[in-house]
Image (cartoon, rainbow, N blue to C red; front, side, top):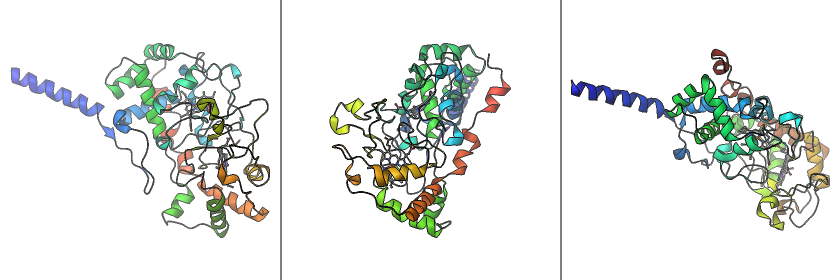
Length: 344
Ligand code: HEC
Ligand code: HEC
């Protein structure tokens, strides 16, 4: 009898352990560098990713339950806020920077345009507590989530405990963001030799490798460094970028190099959204690069492009569009979770 009980308890334990620890292994796309995120400290599981997805779309993360992460990071624009130069948050307050597109974050070492945040697992605290973004305290978020019908269950499925904690909330949000991998554009198919570039795209690719790829490095299309790409300082915003964090004048007007994947959708461009079109961006690089002590050395010599070459370069940039990413149902609003169980 005793033996049977022990076996029963043991089996029960195994079942729970299996449910909790059915980890998903993060796979880097072929020939990509190794991801930077330490998955051993936050092993991926389907339940945690699903919880993170719900939290990403959850307006309860904001003071008055109106703003979710997705308000400023919308899937259809590669998880940026399309058409907004500066981000719009709670009570229609306007921030000071353009919301960056979110993808391939597992490779990033630091976050934000100036690298002010050094780990993905704490990144979400910044928008949650920012007075112009969600203006809420994580303690309140937890109280609100705990009172719902759905979240204690989702946390139990994910972490084996229906008691919601800040740490688990942040880890789950990270998990969802880590799954946002964009690696299936036409460019990627060409690299895999499954298709070919048109002549125009091919020429654009050569121009890109000559003029742009030292900073927008393949395959992520960012070298993940801070660079000054010659934009004049905005007189009103006076955003000095990386120097805000390091206080070193060498870093003045340096910003984290953004990826160019899905660039077709993530306009307006630059840290303050000052350019609407890719042609404006190329006009900047060919005619308006401002010299200065912190200008990145790659731009010391002017970039010269004929108008035909500009057209070709843009044709290449459009091959970085990844429709599978933009329309991936796994990344969209989790209708099923939110509709099957009433939230209150
Ligand atoms: C009001 C708009 C707004 C909301 C809401 C918002 N963000 Fe952001 N997000 C931004 C802006 C603007 C930045 C750039 C901030 C900076 O550089 O200082 C940013 C930056 C980020 C980054 C860094 C990306 C990179 O490449 O470095 C991540 C990750 C991110 N947000 C995730 C989230 C998550 C998760 C939430 C919800 C908890 C969220 N955001 C809510 C506007 C928003
Ligand atoms: C010296 C490094 C460097 C070089 C070379 C460079 N860029 Fe950039 N690029 C950056 C940085 C840094 C930013 C962000 C600047 C900011 O927001 O203030 C940026 C931003 C962009 C953006 C806006 C992305 C977004 O999401 O807002 C585009 C598009 C772009 N670059 C295209 C190009 C093209 C095309 C070339 C070649 C003609 C090029 N870049 C060359 C560093 C570089």
